[in-house]
Image (cartoon, rainbow, N blue to C red; front, side, top):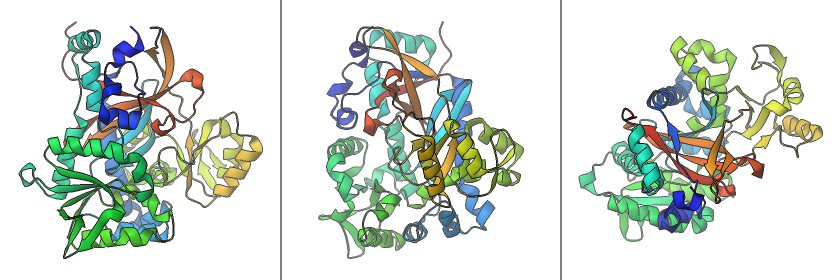
Length: 437
């Protein structure tokens, strides 16, 4: 089968095409029931371990935890002032399939998660008779992640479907222009699912008369697409965000999800889970689960570390000697921004040394390289071609939240798989019933 036949009418979808711009994989990814259940259990364990770090390491001091993962004072203030009574259950793990399991690249937590529209990809691909028959025979199905997202918004904000709350899907001004078409389509879909949803950027919200307003609409819930890193974009940024955070603190509006979700999702928090010195804080079952999916990850700090092989070494010495096995990542940026892969052909030894020494005591981690399994996809001639695939797997209030894939061809040589830089997107089907053959 040729790629275009299997992709179907996805490029004609206003919602999908507004974000993916016609780049769709020619088949779904597949995961068996036992594998999916194990992965979900590991991701729930990972989330619970992350949320527990302030108590286990900092005596419950979230501000100290935030500083330790690389937050600035401005960001720490935003996190403390807008913290909710509980941490969101809406997450997306980005993983590579490696050998017999999955290895984590990063863990995203919050409301600004791409891929929530994956059910549309699933439905369209399953219109093809070949895929539909295969899915039926193998007992494959999918979770409607967008429907689960709406449930998350209601449950975590204290509303019900009968309330029909006004929801402002709110971005940051500098990115809103590009994302507005997609956000408009997204809000249309939310409206069909029972939310009175409207797109905007944070500068369009006004705090007055004990409420937050979007024009003449009083807003019940702000679904946050703006990020903690936006506070550092320019000196006036906090003044734009502070009134909204203060209104939420006074109970005048709900924010889905509060800013604290980003401190738990920072890569610095993963380094704390990976650190040999902290293993005594976790049970044997927790460690087994974490070890299964979490690669060796360390903050870039001078001094001794335990290496992936269990030996002690000076971190800088180890990083310089093993650059082809390490990635340098900023702790708080998103979408692959600032990531440097030590094995990339355009990174020299001297450049790597300069990067490592420059990152010391800064908001950076080193993470062990993960070598993903190659997946084969039909091309336009019907020939199978190898692709590098990143799995995006969701957890939601109801449990497993489905998933979607991003991929680049092996021959492209792309080192970071990211939709914003040209990756293709596709759905994930999981085993929901016993196969019929």
